[in-house]
Length: 245
Ligand SMILES: [Zn+2]
Image (cartoon, rainbow, N blue to C red; front, side, top):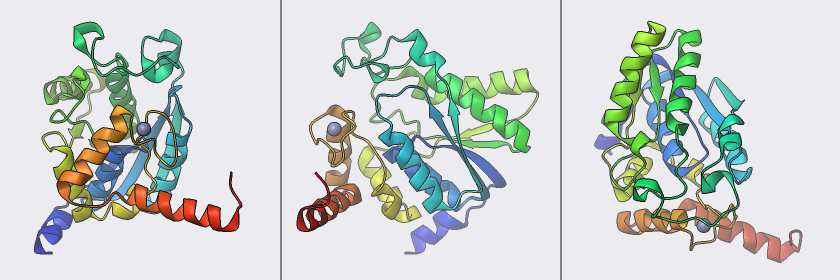
């Protein structure tokens, strides 16, 4: 595994703030950052997302990764403004919103989250923020594009007089490539506790767009999803002992 050594030895700076939603991509990014920074500060937003299970996943994963501090910041304003299926109970649609975007797009979300992450980085006197944004297999969200983030770095530099680099290790990877990266950076065990399903189910529903995209990545990488392995194991155990409904 010479390759994984190369991945883990490339140290960038003493500390970084990592955006951690509790999903697959941010979990991989957290472990990517583990090999590159000595101290990690994980940041999760409670913004009125449909399912609290995401926040539980983020807590578990932050603990597993041994971060120095994990903060869950309340950002209720996005849900107050509304306009996204992620913040309501309306059905998920993969396209057909404004500019043919999926109706899961939350306008301003990444801009706001990254700005808040930069504000925390400023307080910590740290220059590095890591996020799971990806424009390859992405859902068409314009705030996941590298060009948006480059412009935001510049806005932060001007507006805070503080340099912040926004690292996006998954930006140009396909879902299959990011699964392989997960293996390389040692994120598999934590991925068993990540949450992806739009329906908020555990075991995952397997049919929503988020579940299908996740399954496709693991299938193409030829690796079994550790979340499904865990789901099978826990369901088996629950059935055997008749502890859970
Ligand atoms: Zn699902």
